[in-house]
Length: 470
Image (cartoon, rainbow, N blue to C red):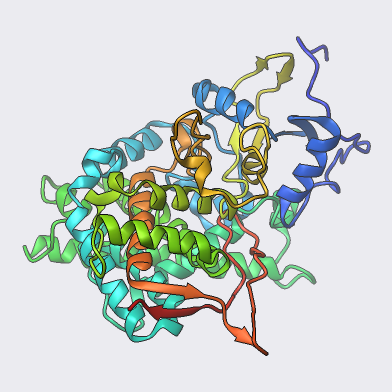
């Protein structure tokens, strides 16, 4: 077959299998970085005839996925996450279709703009204030408090459900389902996505423990879809629901079975698009402040001067706190928790610049590599919040949120919710607490800075000391 242009460069593959054995099953951004050093900003590999394009340069991601979103807004067929677990029916993984367009419309109307988010300012500030109080009471449980915060915000917004103070059943359910989603959508996390024929082997077959995992994960997903929806629907029908996404939709009319299916998934999309991202983002804020005490003190000095010592910041203060904002952005860049994002799919043939991109190609973004690209971020391995300050003679560098929340029509619909929540938590923590590493034998013990695998990557467990500021 003759192509209208050459394929992008990449490692040579074997007959039939192609590069199937070259594809990384963990920490793919490390392999992508090595490929970038050898082959350049755009790399082609294949596995059993499936074309895979790795975009190692943010310019290609922006030009292809944002500017040509119509061509590249498909999703590849993920056997484990999409078919076996069931996420293929939801907003994140479903293919472009009337149902997907309806998901986008519903979510955009609810939380798709900054103006829409202003209606939830009071809710966010109330939840973050209670979060700070919980950390003040039991700082050693900050991870659990963070997960409860993220779950509480999205459950209230989607279903009008306020979690209990202790281990809440729905918060735990959402948390578990989102961990499963992140695991299952990690690059080549399961062999069945590389060798689709494996989907037909029985659960009892030696080495098929992943098949049992798929069954259990599917059951969790179905419970996550139905339990909060049914709870909210009953309260809406009896007139005792708090205002929320579902109350707005279900109080208008009787819905058909198809409409109910769409609403279940759209409601789930509110927290699947925001909860785990928010948790990971807050975890890296704790990580950064544990490692960078000088920058923490600068931000605290700005908060004291602008908001007032001992005063809680609010979202309206954001524009008056440029250093806090810069520190927040540098933390998102330096400690990447969305290293590859979710893959896209080319819906038609394309020639981009000098390279041919075949229809059906899986498009993967090396977001972790974008953040360490010296062309975009000079001296990228240095933690430097000042790169995001607009000062005389200095152009502010690329906003890391441009890459973190996805590209084109597949960008996360909850971007404004996640961003507002993470920033408010960051500012509130800095205003209230001092975060530092534990001390052993008279020396500080800093976190390793290592991260877990998954489409949303969390810092490995680390210790930090959280002290109330005097």
